[in-house]
Image (cartoon, rainbow, N blue to C red; front, side, top):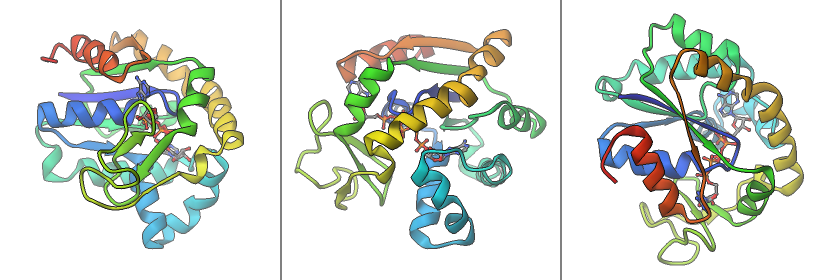
Length: 212
Ligand code: AP5
């Protein structure tokens, strides 16, 4: 199954994508994680993307499309994949089609802007493996340490409340039109993100037709 997880920043795409990825045994391809990794490693792409990420703006389409093309060509994507954070603009969605990639479902997680701003303030992220936690809703077993890989957890720079507001504006202006794009193709399924993470997981599994 080739799935797109769609939604505003902080809607819970990464959290649900990780759960579904383990259930289905297919990789999650997160453009955000790949760009953060490039920044950490000081690559040319990372250096040019840093100012966009820090400001909460979108990295230019041609950069992200290039990354995705290379990643989807890898063998582990042969039996399916989950796209988390891509596409984010109409040109990115069109580029995916031009690559000949067939999408089975676009899972849209809807959460209000107010709830997102509350959530982002408690998010903790592992910069090594990309896992995401929340100090109240989804804490790691040991405070400040990633359950998956044991690395230290950090607060993402772009989770600063002012940057989150900009990310939400960018989402509504540039990314939200994709709902209509995929709805017209009959691919969009929407779940309402719940206060309890496990409730969203259940609704996501139902929408995808997989076992919870
Ligand atoms: P990216 O890393 O993709 O960030 P995002 O889309 O803004 O999404 P987030 O990772 O912030 O949130 P999420 O929806 O995955 O939520 P999460 O599961 O963590 O992109 C970052 C930047 O990279 C962009 O701003 C841009 O600059 C660049 N970029 C990336 N892709 C790009 C592209 N295609 N084109 C151009 N630029 C691109 O959950 C959030 C928090 O809430 C967590 O703490 C979690 O534990 C908690 N939580 C989750 N679900 C629940 C629940 N149901 N109840 C309570 N808490 C919950």
